[in-house]
Image 1: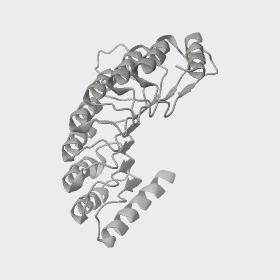
Image 2: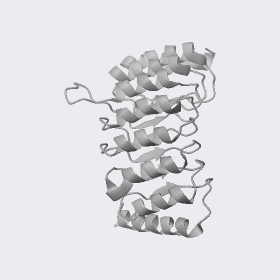
Image 3: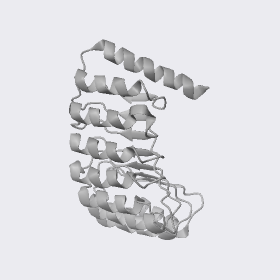
Image 4: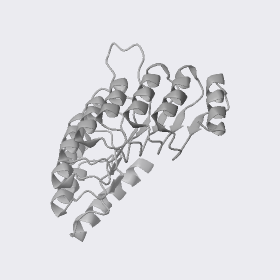
Length: 254
């Protein structure tokens, strides 16, 4: 750890009330230093945001953060993108965010960003299962994680029983038309709380876009669906989707 990082560690341990976020982006500090920093947060009551993207923390760092979240109920946002996190790290995070009726302490994390990692369908499945009981997450970022339609199906099934998640970011994966169709079923008739759905760069064609259009016709909550970078050629479908989204935006303003 360099001098700046050691000073940061000292402030965390001191529970400095002016320190409300940890910002170490692309510092590449590795798993050992990451673990040392986050372990110091166990008794911290002021840090609310962890900006730890690009630090090569791997599953070890992710597991350390999960351990801290078990006892720290101040942290609201964890940005852990581009860190080489795999299924094991995803399982650790999902486990601490699951909520059961008899839990003494409920999860409080509101934003989890694990984009640009190596979750794959296995890692995404753990996070999807977590959504079934979690009532704190508002945003979940899973961009660029080599996800396929299998992940979309798992997410869609659990979204239908989730009342909290408002934004789901899935851009840069391989969901395809099958994945789009699964997610369309989840948003049909507004049976989930989503207002933002990112499906950019996912190999979706007119077929998948049409199923989303049909679902949006009966959903009054979603105000943004990003379909950029896909293989949609029917401009009328896109115009109709945008028209429905605009109507929903006006409803929310009333």
